[in-house]
Amino acid sequence: MFLPVAFCISPGSASNAGLENIFSPCGLGAYNILMNYFKSLVVAVGIFATSVSTTFAQSEAAPAEASAKSVGIVAEAPAEGRSVKCEQGFMVPYTQKLEGTDAEIEMVPIPGGEFKIGSPDSEENRGEDEGPQVTIKVAPFWMGKYEIRWSEYQSFMQLYDLFKKLESEKIRTVTDENQVDAVTIPTPLYDPSYTYANGEEPEQPAVTMSQYAAKQFTKWVSRLTDDFYRLPSEAEWEYACRAGTTTAYSFGDDASKLGEYACYFDNSDDVTFPVGQKKPNPWGLYDMHGNVSELVLDQYVADRYGNLSKDGVDANSAIVWGTKIFGRVVRGGSWQSDAELLRSAARAQSDDWRVEDPNIPKSPWWFTDEDALTVGFRIIRPLDAPPEADRNKFWDPDATKISIAVDNRIAEGRGVYGLVDPDLPEDLEKVK
Image (cartoon, rainbow, N blue to C red; front, side, top):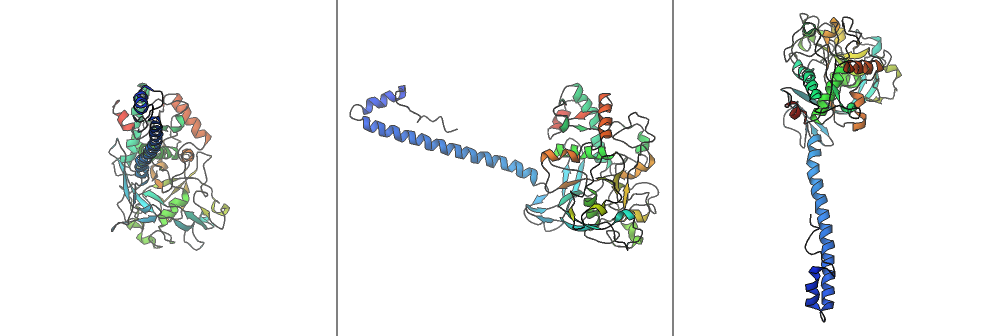
């Protein structure tokens, strides 16, 4: 600070006495002139100091903000690889490291644009719920290059015991005031042999989680990285799957080529494949057709497209926010699906895949029935994140029954809340 400079002299002070004697009696006028000069200097220095301090504060804060917003953005288009022009520069692929774990997620840029959701009446094997076609405007985002794998999801699952230890050590205590910012972690598996029936190798797609659990995963990634990740909406998913195409599949209409791009009923041998074994779509996304069906944000409504404006809507406005536990939209088809269910426009929905769950209340995090072995998810990061106050609706329970089940489980000690931020890995080291 520049303000406490030794030039701050006021008449009558001890430090002034000598000067008054020097200029007194005949030099008092000169003394007053000098005092006025000093006062002006003090004001000028103070203003300068305040200005410099403000400038430095802004320049110090700017890099942190820029750093958070520049992940996946470069100033100039790279000579090789995908890039998407945006106001901030160019969106490029990047790898999101999940600190405190060995896991990382590869993200691919998806350009903004418009497309017609659904299928035309002329498309072979189309479902009635795929029409009428409506124009959807989609904002730019990054999408996971692959479906979320066990390498990432098990890193999330492993937090359960660690959060229990933090709770017992009264570290990162969750209160009524901060609970809204907390994340719930899936409980330990009741029967791992079921969930891992097709393997738990790191490159295998994770399966059998509920939509709520998938959304909590995105909340964990968001809080850990200080950025915003979520599930795609149904419209965003189809837009990314089509990758600019209007054909039945992202590679054309010829289903005989499906084996080059997808793990499905005809070639799966009744198991999932490790991710990324087949050809990607034109935007570099793997397994958008087949392998596992993918959970999205929307509640399933059969005639949804007919209720949208024929003049077109933006993707966020088209989201059907959930009010029931089931059914939630799943897209892409799976290793167990026939070819027609892998079409870009094909829609399916979740069911109550918890019949064999012996718990009461039934788990809000896990499914236990065979059909759930075909369901996973992938994540997106919008270029323009919503305000902080609007983010929890993308992450937290949207149906009352889910909220009640979570609260009951945690009250009984069969669940745990945890506060997540970029400093979490440091605190976890204290209880490992």
